[in-house]
Image (tube, rainbow, N blue to C red; front, top):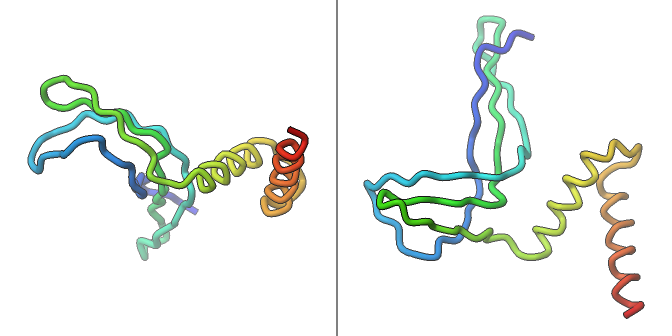
Length: 115
């Protein structure tokens, strides 16, 4: 399969600590996870590939050079699931994510019950 172009689509949201102004530029530093890829047929035997990036942390600077610290709008449970997913993906374990997630949640609960 011939891929002509690669695109990055940003998706998700973060909470801003202040009001933002339409028409102003902001410099952003984004940390996030690629959560999907989509191949789009160009009908000429080639494809374009789009990756979806969901932000985890964004730091910004406004036109005046003042820092803006955005916060992840996801719940603590969503953050934990995302963290466990990245851990599983990087582990190359021969089990599916749902099994891994269940085992890790059991470990976390067991540790809390020992306190």
